[in-house]
Image (cartoon, rainbow, N blue to C red; front, side, top):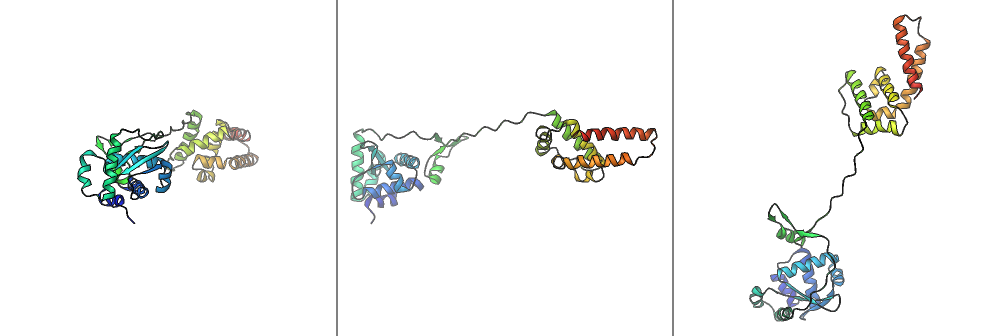
Length: 279
C-alpha cells in the first residue's frame, strides 16, 4: 500500500537513480508517521547500496530540498521526507496528502530548532565535475544519482631500463646485415632489445660472441633465411654455434693446398672458429 509520502515522491520528486531509491526507502520506513530514525548502515542494507553511496544520496536529497536530516541518538539520524525549501514549501503543501503535509510541517519545526546534524564519516575525496568552465553536476546527478565525482590518482609509471650501448650495437649490427642481404630492414623494437640484453645478462654471452654469431648466421645460406630478428637469434643461438663449429671444421679438413688468398680466408675462418668455440 502506497503511503502519502511515497505518493508525493512519485508525483513530485526530482531525485533519480540511487537518490530516488534512498528517498523511497526512507518514506517506506516512515509509513504514515512524520519521521523515521535509522542508521546509515541500516538504510544502506535496505537500499542494497554502499554506506558511502547512501551518504552521497542523502546530501543530494537535502540539496534538492526533499529530505530533512536531524541529529538523533548517537549514530542514528532522524529523516523527514518532504519539501524543506522555504520558498517552495508553501506551494508544494497545497498538493500534499494529509500525512505528507504533516511530515513537511514537522521538518520545518525541527529545522528551526537548529539541532546538531548527523555526524558523518570521512568521505572519499570528491569534487563537483567542472571541465573547461562547464558544470556537469546536473548531468552526473541524472546519470549516477550523485553530483559528485571521485578523483582517483593515476599510478606512477615504472622506471624505464637504462640505455645499453652494447645492446644497441648488437641490434643495429643484425639489422644492417639483414638489410645487406637484400631483405627489408627490420624495425628494432623492445623485443629486439630485450633479447639482446638477455643474451648478455642472463645467457652469459659477450658482445663479441654475439657479433660473431650474427655475422656467421647472415653469411650462411640456410641460416640467413631463418634468422630475421634478435629474438630468433637468441632462441637458435646454441644450434647456430654448434652448426658453425661443425661446418668450419669440415671446411678446414677439406681445404686444398692454400695459396695466399686461401691462407687469408683460412685465417678468417680460424678466427671465427675460435670465437665460436669460446661461446
